[in-house]
Amino acid sequence: ALQVGPPGRWWDDKHFAKQLKLTEDQQRHMDTIFEQNRPTLLKRYESLQQEEQRMEELTHAKTLDEGALFAQIDRIEQARADLGKANLHYMVQLRNELDQNQIAKLGEQQQ
Image (cartoon, rainbow, N blue to C red; front, side, top):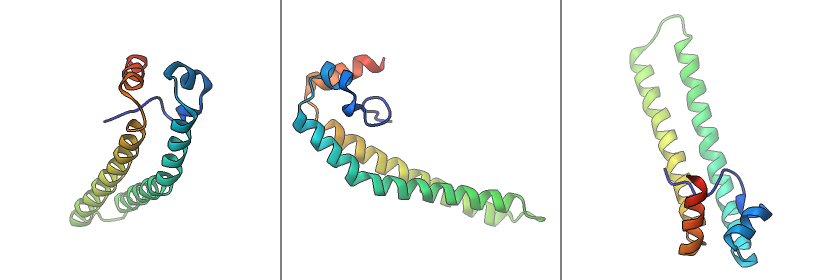
């Protein structure tokens, strides 16, 4: 999966910002991207958690309904895919704020 920087709001870290030579404008744009994507990411994460909880409940039933279990697996995988897509969208937006030198420096730090 595409990972742009360490987890969290790494662009607010003074060490990283200085090392990557991030401009204040880049940091402001990244803050905006974070705020725009946060509700969707939280919603997708919560949806995945709910689907996993439903699976837990199904597996603790007195009798297991194989059809219901397989259907729930499909719902979990769809929720996981939706979260992954939302996260990738967010990461691409963050990466688009960086120039090629900054991307290269981030890549070096992640190795």
